[in-house]
Amino acid sequence: MEYAVETISLTKIFSDWWGRNKVCAVDDLNFKVQTNEVFGLLGPNGSGKTTTLKMLLGLLHPTKGKALCLGGDATDPKINTRIGFLPEESYLYRYLTAAETLDFYGRLFKLPTKVRKMRTDALLDMVGLKAVASRQVGAFSKGMARRIGLAQALINDPDLLILDEPTTGLDPIGTRQIKDLIIELAKRGKTILLCSHLLADVEDVCDRIAILYGGKIQAEGHVRDLLQRTDKTEITTGHLTHNALSKIEQIMDGEHAEYAVTSPMDKLETFFISIVEKARQQALPTSGAESKTQISDFLTAQAAEKARPAAILDKLVSTSVSSQPSGPAASPQTEQVHPVKTSKDMPADDLLRKLTEDAQPETVSSDREEPVQAQEDEQQAAGDNILDRLTGPSQPKEKQQQKDENGGDSSNA
Image (tube, rainbow, N blue to C red; front, side, top):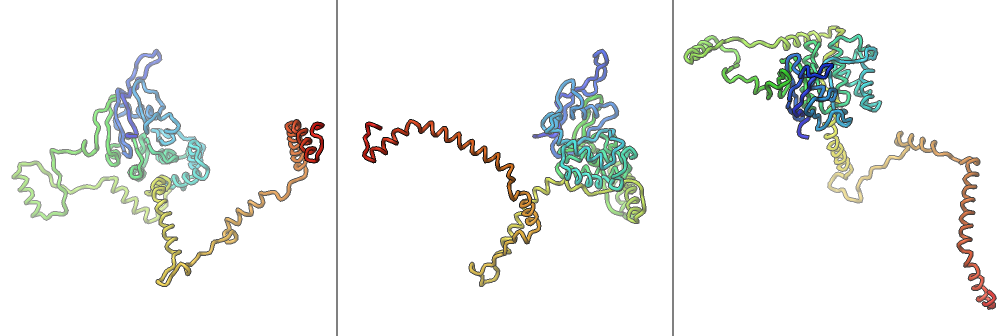
């Protein structure tokens, strides 16, 4: 699989009641998203972004062309179980709590009970909703609804994550948290396709972007290549003295270049988060969602599985080394042998032995012995009858042989 997402001449035309073409939402769209990439699909309202996502997920049938996810059709159960989707509006059951909501979506993916419980707790803590896990989602604000929506999109540990306006309704801290989460998921090998009107957020997290207008791609490429300006030069230095600034101005005047000497400014987002962080360090109470920066452990399961064989190997090596005798006078006859633990020393084995003994019946009831014995007698009788029939013709020969041995008349046999 070379691409995680691929569209080939994708077209969607909405018709009116009479079947006449009314709106061309997506017109001959072609783009590719590589595996382990953060790709941004941008455009104004009505440019075809959401329609494209719905065709990728199989929620809409294209008028022409193909939309492929993870190398196949997203309606295939083997593929859609590897996709996580956060729609523009989170459609949640109002009377379910946050924990029940995640458990419900985990059941849709047929996750075992223990796995659902573990992932529910981990995701609620990750998106900052652990304190309100028992509150009904109908009472959530829009920002909290987006948080629980993101959690449900991650419940199946997807390979492809499709996000439609993920930061809508979130406060600056929640927005920063979602952006950090997207960056961390990309580091963990996930592929992310996102749509957003907040261009500053897209600029911070996306590797490549495509800008739609009228259902067509107007620009596509790496963010740095599209935003880089080659007609200007920017120099950032530390604090300069007045004498140094005067010399720089003389040089600029000699080059007849337009210039401006100013002090750099922080982003308002950075300043806002720093103020809130200082208040949080003072342990001031708040009734809102908490901010978390760590990613859930189960989303890094692939990395843990890769590291596990090495850890087991290290343990085995260390055990074999420790069992060898130490010192120059050691010999095979003096090798230390570690005692083997019996079931009495191991509570788990003792419990297993006890359960096994309890499960085996000591005696077999007589009412079960009689039918079994009768069935065996019937089978034995039937076998004897068949044997008699087969050996019947051979009995005269056996009698004749006995008479010959006893000296009798063989003709009378």
